[in-house]
Image (cartoon, rainbow, N blue to C red; front, side):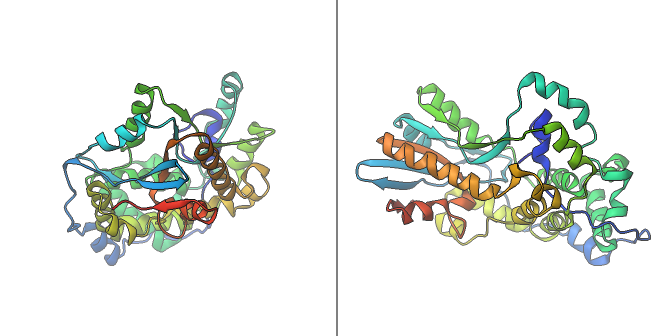
Length: 339
């Protein structure tokens, strides 16, 4: 779910909580100032890098190569995609990474644009000062000054949208980027080799997207936890993010396997999925499980139909407790990690 979708896809933005609270203007906490000013020790790698190897899923003579994508990555890294491009060229199908989106026709989408205006604003004209606890607001002020600067307009946006902006700005100033271009390179290689590209994105059916958007605009969403996790990442996790980015860039499988890739995602997703708004919308019911099942269905079909398939998965779904590959292994497929 991302605010990068247009029109009705604004609905996919739903992701966080607001604990409405009116407090006096606080002074920045010394600890927060110190943490925000700390300089990460890890140097972000630069130049041409191999990236991680691929995981091999097989049954009989049918194989699926799984590539783990990750963000953020070093800004000045150039990914050496030669190995992956060769595998893509030898495959009959490429599966995109899993996700979800709302399908709305172009002309219908245009009619939704007036409804989308202001969807990122807090209900009833509230500001971040109104909806954030005093200590969280103090920490936000420190990081806002460091990474965003003067911007009064941002104070009226919902915490979840502010968190996205703050994280992007903070990463950029730390030598990292969320716009990695890795998936685009893989899809370009597939098109060049005339390899079929299959989307594993789950389509979400909404009977009345206009009404859903209006409901979201007037609803309080519990996104303080997501916002707070974002502050924590920028206050104390930048160095760890650099370590993760370097591990991906250098293809260090052992180091990648020891890292936690869930990070702030769970807090932000829970804010949406556990909100009353989402609970009342059938399209959001059991969405993570449906996204996972949709990818599994596509993967098993590809493995049955093709002698060679190439698939993309977020790294957190390749290794660790959320691994999709563990599900395939449980279904009788052989899974081998890169050497």
